[in-house]
Image (cartoon, rainbow, N blue to C red; front, side, top):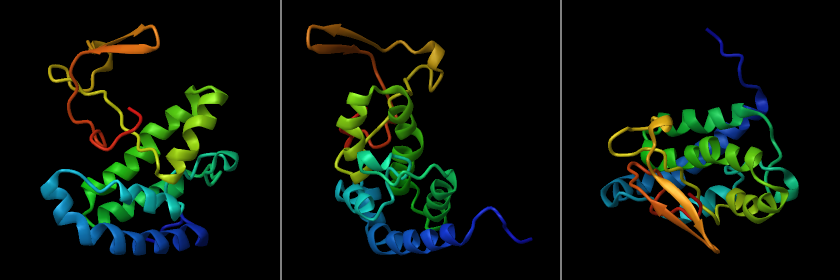
Length: 169
């Protein structure tokens, strides 16, 4: 059965990302798995090739592409290479965290954070999972309370993909 989801531009993007995986991810996978962390430089390299923040508006340093099929290509190629750990960090950054920054931030926050998210200078993570409840957000017990210029965060989180490298959680 012929796939009709992707067009020629997507397949060119796929070829480029597949080369990136072969050059930058696959040679490091064993080490990253043993260390439990991918190098921060992976994100900067992915950003410099246009593989991060594809949906970030051009005025904020992104690709300005509102076509999730590019993200799907990244997901497929990460899985095809067996690069779930390091690749999951990229897909989490693009597909789970970025939409929050695109839709729930002020213009000032977008100007502050989106360029770094697109370039890989800023690495994102999401901290939903708690020890006793998993990802049941309605049962979450962690709290954050403003204290002057600071926030007091009280609670526990587990399974924070990109957490060790993250600049924005």
